[in-house]
Length: 134
Image (cartoon, rainbow, N blue to C red; front, side, top):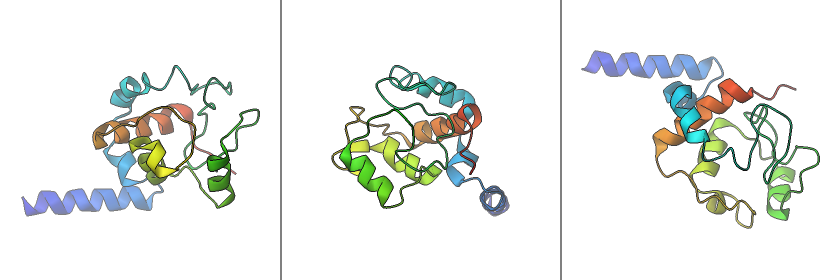
């Protein structure tokens, strides 16, 4: 059992060292696609088209409030001005409870309480939507 834990910790360390977070290492993109169904009414993932919410193309590691043509709340613009980047860790906190993570934002979604749902969704966002590169 100890060997399994050591191997698991080494695997997570290797993944994190390769630029991926532990959340992504644990996430299943196929399961994340199912979780994304809760998001797709308001967000587009594969086209740079805004809906009620901004598109999510290359959301992973993208600076916050950067989608052109989308009117962000003052709270989100302030967070962006203070350096908020949508890292996997910040996405996890946002997805858990958007109102708590950035008080005063306009997102109506209550959040995903299950850690596994958030991990799976983040893995799906990375795989299908891509990663911000600049």
